[in-house]
Length: 164
Length: 268
View (cartoon, rainbow over the protein chains, first blue to last red):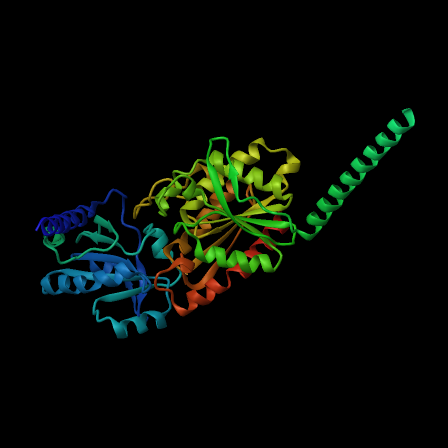
């Protein structure tokens, strides 16, 4: 019984720590983000003004990235119809690597290809995944380094508060 | 009496000369053949006894490989065996074991640079060989600090015996980098003047920051070169779930080390 209580306490603490990891952005103005998607279509962050944008930097070799993707899908479903989009920026892998990955993992949010690492450098990303929450005016409001369960109430609430 | 004394004295002198000649010949033979016994451990002025795994090699270069973040350095030991067969002597000091530290990256910050400096100095003196340092991950920090400390008290002649340092996926940040914030490297990076060779796995975000790190090293006067290893993660040789490419690259560790040594020697 004691072990069970300890286990539940640990789980509770772990989820609290995850929620606290969402940090208020203090890095100044939003860096540029202009990349092609997997189909070669050029996209810019400015194209999404008026929406909350989750910009996630990820790679197929990164286990926490893969672990959090289903929760991003659930988050997207919970916010269906709301001005919210996910842009998943792949960190310098080939189109083939990403397309092979998508045959195994079911995601339907936009994937951008940072082939030469320029966006990664401009956004100063050192760890995969790293996620930025951008408000409808195009300003970064929160940042999180490492994986998360994005449909948990703590994150959902922050995102809902950012919606116009 | 006098003659007997003289004869006895002459015999003693001959005996001493023969003994010295034998010792000299033995030393020369062992020196040439490389068959001298490497020490089992090194003692530092701080009182630590640092056990060594040694892999004798016949060449005049010695790889002093410090434990990786995983502590035991299984793959490093395998690579050392292969290198020894190719003539490169290898010593692997157990720095973590000397301090009963767990095999974690955070333990590396607790290794006293003074002890590293003394291990480097003793290795150069005892082996009489040119020494190349090899380390990985967070281990790069104390090893560079120790090398810097040793260089500062060594004579120019002694300094020439330290060829340089090979770093695999080095972690040299002064604080854990946060997204959106300029990364800060430990001051030892810009103070290092040793030739440096860096290997970085392609499948790692650190690959994109390699040029920044090289610029920081160059500020201290280091001649620095690097290579991005294709299709492998940062710690490919200690991965729990290695891919086929990572297994193949791990098999190539001896070749990678020899290539890097050649590059370091050309930069001295």
